[in-house]
Figure (spheres, chains in turn green, yellow):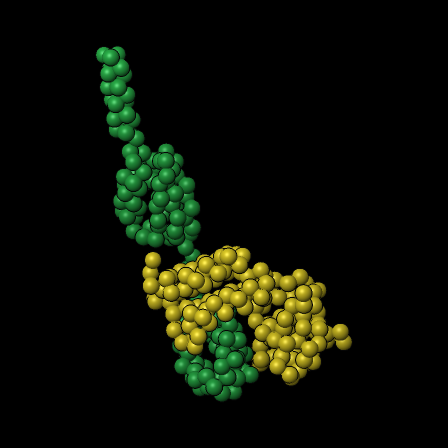
Length: 156
Length: 141
């Protein structure tokens, strides 16, 4: 009887000890997130933790930030390993006005009822267009890498 | 997730599911920029249809959807898909370039180069070579 009791106590002590040195995934996640928040270039990074494996996903500014985040996550107590699934964010490429205007002229050539202007990367469309042709024109204009398209066209 | 990202999530999800590669979606100054390469023209149309569901009039002014189509093989055939008219073949890539030939509506011609996204270098069976507006050319499958 006494023997059984001591085993039970030992088992209890062991389980307490085990939970004591193995932080919960949720706590680890919170710590990793705090670390990520310290890096202002990592505002879009999400963290998940499962059995001590931290997975980072999202977009970061550059390769250096990517490595820095991985290192910071590894430093957190309870993180066994880090899966770094972040990708380097590449800023959208905006066409210069001159080539953009040339592209817009070509694209709207067959749409005499459409007038288009280009200013600082923004294409502004006015006039009318057949509803069925609007998607085709929009596809072409989107492919010219403008900053924005202000579409004021009335469909017919 | 930002409001814009949520607004267009169905679109990015559809692009991922349809096998669009190099897919990137990011926001800058209130505009969402979604880029990628579709494996075929049909997939590109599918993604554009999704955009049409989200913004049927394309008046939101908050998305630039730049989906390119994976390059067709050089020497492959493309069909002239104008509404009814002939397609001009020009000396250079631009409507300001001289017209050097014409391809009839429905004619199947040879693709020489797609190095310019909007203007493809083509050759007719008569041997006329020059640039034609890509919007009116559909790869033959």
